Amino acid sequence: MKTNKQTINKILYVLILFLILMVTGCKYFIEEVTKNKSYKFHETITVLPKGTDGTVGTDGVYVYFGDWPQTIKADDVTIDEEESIIMGSNIYYKGSDGNYYVRCLEDASSNELYYSNQTPVLTKESNSYKYFKIEPIKWRVIDTNFDHDLNAGTPGKKLLFAETILTGNINFYDYEHKKRLDDVQKQKYNQLQKLKPTGLLDALSSKLLNEIINGGSIYPNNYKHSKVRAFLNGLSYEIRPDDSPVQSLNNMYAGKGFLQTAFTDKAQLLIEVTTVDNSVDSAGYQYYLQTDTFYSANDYSCENTYDKVFLLSNKERSNKNYNLYISVYKLTDYAKENYVWYKYNYGKYFLRSPLYQPEWIEDYCYKVEVSDNREEINGCLQVTSHGCIHTGDRIGADSYNKIGIVPAIVVDF
Image (cartoon, one colour):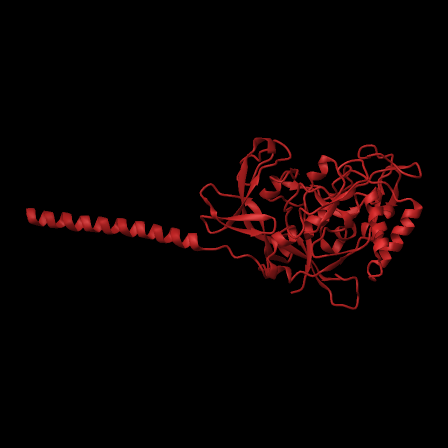
């Protein structure tokens, strides 16, 4: 009996040991598989299944394309900072779940904001860092026949508009205002601009053109010279730190803007260069209830630009076929920690169109003396958390940093 009992104990011991080894081995195997699993960047356009939900419900056409930090890291995910890659301006670290994460200093626009996991978004003063998961960017196809080169003779392309407010804390321009061009400057500036595309702009004329720009003649709501356009496309831009006419070139986004961070080199090849319409017509007419009058932003329009990433204009945002007038936009967790203000999880976002705002609108008027003794505000249009067009505060004000960015791109598929 004793021998049989000893034999049974030995068998049980072996079985238990075997089970322990099996469990340990499986756990190790799972950990190794997860560790070696790599996040695949969305370098091609993936059309999501019919019936996918989005900003216009299940009737819209949605796609995945490109990648961007979005959701705060789950508590059970650990980060290996020894394993990283660089994408544009960001460093991405490998997580234990196989995904990439970016590490950021929290910078809430108020003390009353919360992430999707219901933890509070802390202000910059807390000196708190969080990780955010890199995820595919979801877009809605808002136009299937978009005239991207302003040439009716070429086939239309597909205009994509991001489904969420992706980031913020990037002012439209770096300074509050610049002086109006006087008549002589304006005439000379327009003449010189016409020479640029022809290649006939000589060194002396080029120097004069730069002097006009650097002399403080371009308005802060000029989209061509804006900081936000530089961020979107990875360009340099002029900064003006104070009231002096001196400006300098800032290269912080050069070659590492949203375009280079959200899209691999392969993915960038799929994005069309768009002739971005910055005409007076693109800004539309802005109605003011106080005088029952429509006003044009004629003084603040600028030349067309040629970009792969851009903000929508007032005309595009108001196109009823795009169904944007019924859409409100949620923020990613990453946008929340990037100073974007929101209410009930919906936030404001920039349009590229300048506004015209007469002196008698006291609530938003930032008064700037101009040559004809009128007072105006140099701002740009924005869409509110309610989905309405809003004129906003002066450019350079802190409130502009709280406005989010929802980019648009043109592709062909």
